[in-house]
Image (cartoon, rainbow, N blue to C red; front, top):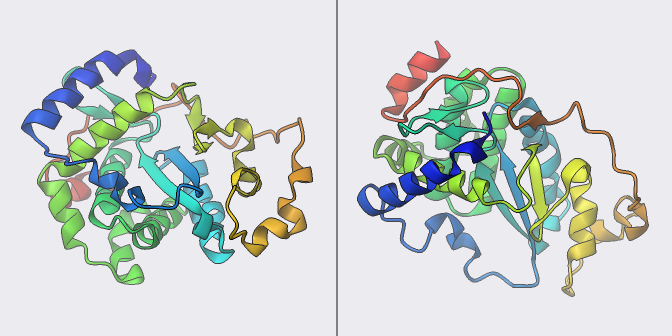
Amino acid sequence: MAFHVYHHQTFLLFLLLHVFFFQYNSCSCYAQFSEVNDQKVDLTLYYETLCPYCSYFIAHDLVKLFSNGLISIVNLRLVPWGNAAVEPSGYFQCQHGSGECLLNAVEACTIDAYPDVNKHYFLIQCIESLAYQQREAEWQSCFNKVSLDSKPIFDCYNQGNGRALEVQYAYETSQLNPPHEYVPWVLVNNQPLREDYQNFMAYICKAYRGTSIPAACSTAEFMISSFGDKAMDTSQQVSYVGGLQNLTSFMPTEILQQNREVFN
């Protein structure tokens, strides 16, 4: 069932968690953007970790921002919640099962523990690359691959902060206007790209108003003339709200025990 059905309950749960479980002073997940150049373009990706289209987009497409220099003009935010729902009991339901709920919280903790996008993105990219290959059970191998310490992320998860972060992401996702219809759901300067999300780099270049224009924006691939009225057909490249689901109630508690339960 789509998340918006539960938005009222989620809001109440959000308030309770905010007061009793998690002191989220000035929203640390946004801290990396507090002093950025306001001429940068905001790009936000709403996704879920085991959606194959999200995994491919993160592992193969979005990562190009770092290789072609566009990251220098972009405030990139990842919001790992997607089409999940919060039950009235407070448990989570994720579209692709309990493993997705676990990895959503892991990636939320990754963003919180390592707010520098140049750090958290590549751990998340590694996890999503494995997920796309249906090897998500190997996700812990990514810590060594990208040389990041797992302890801050495990502590975040085990201490309940991962759950609190996910509740906040759930509330944020529920407040999107217009509401998201599927994932990946990509916004550039708060405007949804909808079916044209794979053309995100062209939208970034079009939206940028600064003077430090990366060379990538001058290439034919990203010329403004590349825009057309007809968007590409992505009907088979998204996971819709309320689509086929593998729903299991899930509550983040202890990461290693739950990892064994959901991936073994």
